[in-house]
Length: 464
Image (cartoon, rainbow, N blue to C red):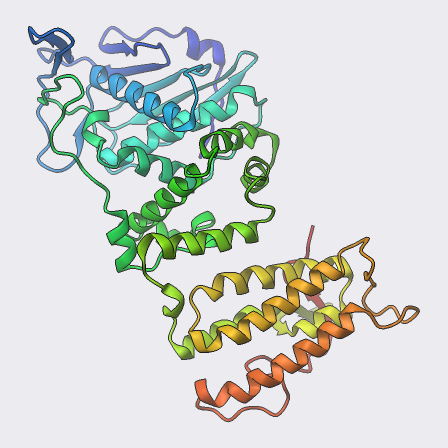
């Protein structure tokens, strides 16, 4: 999200030019501006003769494609309806503080991604979005939801805007749209009588997730760029919707989600806000990963544990166990990328660095467990249990905590963990011929990675 700063007084006090139409929403939070076109009136509401029913009409004609022509009067009504549904989902009342200005600019291409811009002054945040004259409905919906979530989170923030996670915008947007998109977004020439509108559009989340494996928690939180384009983005939105739906199914899920949004300005990353708000259910992000994997299988009635082939499962397990490092051979050369074993991490690294690296390994193994071939799952469970037990026994301040390599104290939990890992490596080496055609190497735990690396070794991603 991009935020630009302008002179607040100039923006707040500016009056629309005579050749522009300005429309304010019922609550006053939304202001839509559009060029005035001679002979083209804005949308108006007309009584139907039946108490409590009305009709909205506009002389604009719908596009031949799926894009939605933007009429300022219809747009502000749509925004108010989206806000009402969002506040209801979060269990909140409408207590807005920041105004959201929507600028309809016909010069913008229809496929341009709108950017939410904000300005902060002593009175707080205000926002504006430049929109083309017609836009894809789902995109418009996400833009409005993003603006509303940002405005909600920043009500108690200072000059540092809150970070809104992408999964929250996509998930809440998809949830609100499911079956109700025509109710929220008014099209020109569409007759609206009360809340009864035909042509419901139901988002087939279940069928979509049965056709394609759901994203992992990490892929949901930190998606690759290719996940956010074309059909891949449809899958991302389906997973985000399911994730939000499952969170809201907790006894106090809407309260927790609303509390997370309130806490976003207090932290540099949303993960901390999430764990604080959902502390009754999750102590660590690893707990969220396990819960999410089970939720996906329960929702789709499909076991995605075998999505990787046996050969791919073998290599994925090896990658999860390898710890990336940078090897410095000499001061005048760039460091080389390499991998080392868990035993080398436990035996040679400083406790803080070792704990951070092993925690990442445990998280990767937990995610891989949902996809690995069942034959390798017991071996993976052995590694995962060993790493988790070691992290629990050697936490700073614990009774068995020992600094790695400290010869002044008796051999502790790190030696026991290394022995268990050696046994697991030997078991994995014996299974190698079943999955890989090349003959197994004689050194347990050394397959598929370089060994005997000289030079100074440093973690590839050292902890801060």
